[in-house]
Length: 518
Image 1 (cartoon, rainbow, N blue to C red):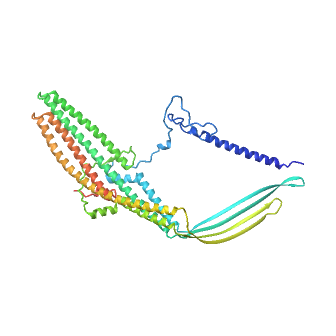
Image 2: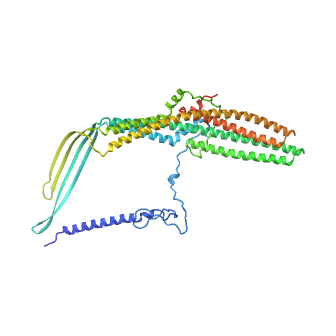
Image 3: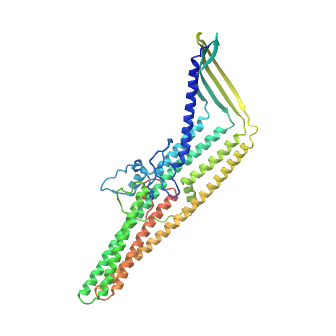
C-alpha cells in the first residue's frame, strides 16, 4: 500500500508547532531568568544602564569597573527642555497687577485646577448620558475549515469542508426606571462640579495673594537695602569726622579705629541686605511660577499708603464673607454631594426596569470539496422588557449604604470645621492687621527719634562735645529703627492683603489696589 503524501505534511506541521512552542517557552524562561539583573547588584553598588546579556530581550545593567562606585544616573535630554519664559518688555517697571497677570498665565496650580474642573464637567455629562439608551452595531464573521482523512479503496485521501458565516446586528439597551438612582448620581456629579469650579476660582485667589505678599516682601527687602546703604553713608560720615579730628590732634587713633569698625559693620549689613533682596526676588518669581532666571524690573512698595484697620466684629460681615469663601463653598458642595450619594446607595434596594431590542441579518455558507456551495440568509428583530429585583447579596448593599452615610457625616463635620476655621482666620487676620499698623506707627516714631539722636550725636562729636561711641551707637540705632519701620510697613501691607484674602475679596489683579487706605 502506497503511503499518502499528506502524512509527511502533517508530521512536518506538528514538528513545526512543537519547535515554535519550545522556542517561545525558552524565550520566556530566559526573560524571567535574567530579569533580576535589571536591579542593582547589591545594596551598595550603583545601578548602571547600557548592556544586554543572554537571551533576554530586556536591557541588562552594565557592570561597573572594579572598585568604582559612581552613583550618577544617565541623563535624559528631554528633561532639560524648559517651558518658554513669559514675554517681558525690557526696561519696563512692572506694577503688582501686571505681575499677577503674568502669574495667572503661567501657573501650573491654576492650570491643574482648571483641568480638574473640566473633568468634573465631563463627569456631569457622563452621568446625564445614563438617561439615554445605548445603541450598538455588531458584526461578527468567521470561517472554519476541517480536513477529514478517509480510506477510499485503499487510497488515503483528505476531504476538506469549509463553513463560513457573517452576522450583523443593531442592539438597543435602555434602563427605563431605577427609582431615582441616576438622578441622584447626576446630583452628585453636579455638586462635585460646583466644588471644582469654586476651587478653581479659589486657586486664582490664592495665587493673587501669594504674588501680592511676595511683592510686598520684596519691596521690604529693597527698602532694607536702601536703609543699609544710607547707614553706610552715615558711618562714613562718622569716619570722616574722626579722621578730621585726628588730623587736628583732638582725636585718638582708637576713635578712628572705632569709626572704621562701624564702617565695616555697615558694609557687612549692606551685603546681607543685598543678599536678602535677591532671595526675596527669587521668592517673588517662585510665587509667579516663572523661570528663576527671568530678569524683570519690579516696582517698589516701600512708599505705598497703608490700609485702614478693618472691623469684622459684626455677625453680618462674617456671614457675608463665609458666603463667598471658595473653600467654604467647595466644602458645602462636597457635603451635598455626599448626601446625594446616600440616595444612590438607597436606590440599589429598589428594582430596575429595562428595555432591550435587537435587529439583524446573517449569512452562512457550507462548502465541501467537489460539491456546490450551500448558502443561507436570515434576518430577525426582537424587543424585550424586563425587570430585575435584587434579593440577596450578602449584605453588600447595606454596607454600601452605611459607607455612604458615613461619608456624609464626615462631609458635614468637615464643612463645620471649614466654617469655624474660616471665621477664626478672619478674626486673626483683622487682629494681625491692627497689630501691624500699631507697630508701624511705633516704628515711625522710633525712626524720627533715632534720626534726631544721630544728627545730634554726630554734630556733638564734630564739635568736640560728644564721643564717637555715642555717634556709632546712634548710627546703629537709626539703622535698626529704619529697618523696623520698613518691616512694619511691609507687614501691614501683607496683613491687609491676607485679610482681604480670608474675606474672599482677593478676586482680581486689581484687588490689592482697591483696599481701603487711610
